[in-house]
Image (tube, rainbow, N blue to C red):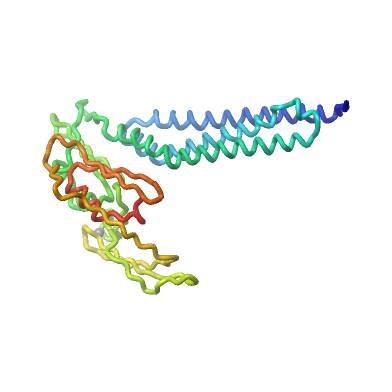
Length: 302
Ligand SMILES: [Zn+2]
């Protein structure tokens, strides 16, 4: 039989108290961040506003929610298993270590879920917000124009942005009053903002390797950009660590005649990388889909 040191018991009691308080605070913080985010979204009046806010902040907010929850688990873990703990102070460290492992595992798994699985879920939420019927200032339900119809409402710069897939404009029309609402969304491909005209139409034309990279040394490359709208050019130097060339080529079958078929709602292109990453892209016609594929570069965009 061993005798339990009363000082050790007193230490354990205050230790547990501190851990309970910290666990409670972490849990409160986790819930607090979650509801703060929900309230923020709910307080935004327009669908477009909600869309932008969710796109910008939701994943990060949920990351903090799970990290705070993992911290709560860690602190709570440091209070369980009294039967062992009273035997020796060593168990306090063992318990702390096990709690840390469990909390880290929970945080890491949630991180992976948020990074790889969750964006697909959020995409559905975003798509709902994007395509929910808008209401005009006269109170009428507006209609979203198709890609073919919307061009008359977009200026040449906006159309150029759509043609390089850097920006996607949604045009909503109130057919009774003629009110038009134009909403701007990020396109599927990256294009830089042109310094001359300000549209996102600056696309990469060619790359020139000035100095090839070796195993020991960085190389150098110049990228030539050209604005698809105003024609301005830009040349920028970049260091190259290693050159990896993509050999894959994507092409749509030519005998797919969907364009102009009103019953076809959208065409989906799913691109899966060798690493298993998946991306889905939606288009209204094959012409758009083909043009997208012609400009798609996996190393840059996926
Ligand atoms: Zn320009």
